[in-house]
Length: 256
Image (cartoon, rainbow, N blue to C red):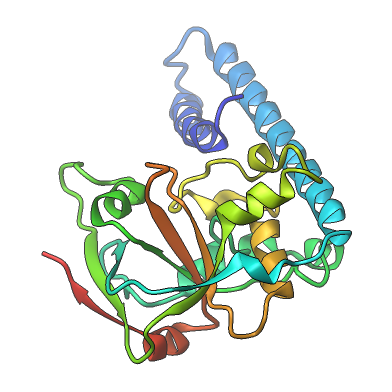
């Protein structure tokens, strides 16, 4: 199946072509563009329906399972990394609250319908995503090595605490693979910095993240999970209500 992100980009280009062609008949095979556009839109709707079906399936299975306190570890690391676009505050959570992310639901995925359907975990939750390795963090952002990129990489450290209480997602997936054999394929390998704002339905990875935090102790900070760029390196998802909470826990400085 063609990735939704590529379909959306191609549809945008097709729309521009069709707009340019309107009334001028630049292309002799104008109807072919219209048919291709309709076909891609159909594929996109099919993929979205499939994802929603998978999210519902996972949500129902999780209802019958118990949270394992042994999934939570004290994680000590002196430095994390975060890469953000131009003019963005590196410790702001506004983007995640609006668009969502790999393991957090944003406003884009939490219409009243889905809030009710996935109650009590269907509400949006802000998050900051960090990498444990600078190169992997830069690759996750998607612009690394591209000419003209204006993104910046930051070092991020804990202000006063020595460790984070993190749920090890790899351990979760291992334990849940018995009651849910297809758990890894459901969670998928979406990048940490995908076009989440385009996703209008909750993804299975978002459902899992919220289920874990709903059942974890209140002092749990977030998740630790394998990078999609290199399975030997890890990323961290820290759940934050707002930038104020993030800046109370973390401090940052630009990495040259």
